[in-house]
Image (cartoon, rainbow, N blue to C red; front, side):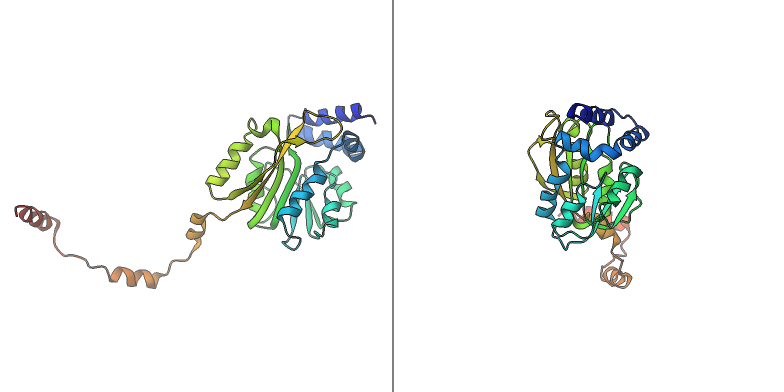
Length: 255
């Protein structure tokens, strides 16, 4: 397939207007995806490994490749020493190809944008490339990715420049930061997602560190009833009535 034909397949993916259309587009493209995106010079699944290696120690714990597709990132992270990698994607056809790479511990058939079938704090890090773009996962997906990363862990992902503001991603970053859910660590300059074709498709990479909201932690602390009783018993209480108090304050103000 030529680069022009590969671009046509890519445009069909970008043109999807629903989750069902997107899944159908990827199912139709799955068998030729790796070869055709290689013809376009698609580099995001490979360059994301640099950010993972920079921010996630190899012994930190399990990683989630969110929107893993055919699993292009997995073998390169495994080569860097990461052994516990799970993949998640909405396309069963793509996941079947990812399984064939032999590096993913678990593969999860689920779509970003809804509740994920994953426990709170299950991962030391989650990373995602090529997912936050035209016609793909919404900015609200970041809430769930934050939930499933443990405190102290990191979230690493790319966002296409054309949707960074209009898709609500920048606003979502700020909301999650204000809520104490994460703190910004790194924001890259814009760079091309495709080294050969599609020069207008530029992205930024973002890294955030997962935090535990102080208020939420405080609410989880058990109340020490005995200490509370001891504290309240030490507070002096006056038996003076409010009327007597007002009268005394009025009399004292005369002098």
